[in-house]
Image (cartoon, rainbow, N blue to C red; front, side):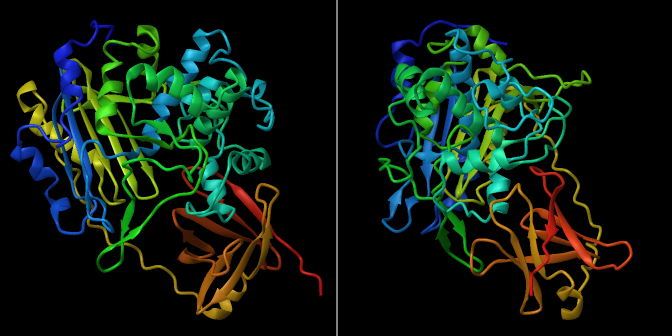
Length: 470
């Protein structure tokens, strides 16, 4: 891991604060990577290449606002989604140094709303995705909340407190989980007496000169120079895709590529925290069985193209982000986008392949495409679908699921009037936006009695079919 290398020189500071035009000398190979965003009326990305403590290249492509025809520049503000997790991790490390907590404390010391599952879950488990807790964003979704809905910390804490089960025992597995970093924001508030937004402003953003950066814990707040987020429409064009969720910690930082250059420098010459904390963030953890995973504290660590890489991505509503550092080459790539199909990790890797080719980076060949034909999904009749109709409930959710047949398809409705479509994938099994829904039948009567939900973030959530009184 890399220790302090000294303070920034005046020249480096000047490079980090580039002109309002937002572009250094043209770099045709890098510009070609982002060419698709130059079409008229397209959202796009801002990119910065940071090398040897200075911004070596920065530029904006596409529109921050299609409606107002505002171009993206390196001063444009984006929501960086889960890239926020590394800042949350540093906040906890600062509080540990302050003596306010230990990463090995039981999370229930600060958040007693977390159920007691009989095994201690620590703050370190939260920050390394090894807690085993169900992902609260999945649970909120299953409870009928779209990202466009207004939701608060209380809503998230309530759904976490309702969970009767976990995905695995803490430390047994590594599974990405937003719950841990949201709960970390509550730990910061209760340990420090400040919200994470205020704590990070005072202890991280202001000391680093990140004047355009904030945790957005109130989605009604005006954010100067922020890009609107979009998703492609079926056929052509774009639709606005913004979120009204007010939880932070797992996401919600608003920032620019230029501010992230200041954050990147802190990994070499820490003005906030110290070398021990920086090392801790970039040191991968170990599971109960001794197997190492690739996650530190809010950061992934691996090799790419033969070079060591420290990185993280972010995805929320229509925003996409990637911060990718090659520490041994002292070179980083920041790509922030305002359209959901941007794929910023791939963009950053392509820029890295251009920028670091003389440093020995050999871009891996893309994986071979599988040509196996997808199995033909079943096509149940209306009569077969009616066997699933009913109300299903569990204490883990605030509202029951109402399963109905609508236009020869199975729909589930629990908060929104129009409901969502269940797509058949196998006998008694359906898919719903990344969830697998399997219906259970009584062994004797063969009647449907329950359903079980599984996804990357939720395992074995069982809803029981309710008897309806005449």
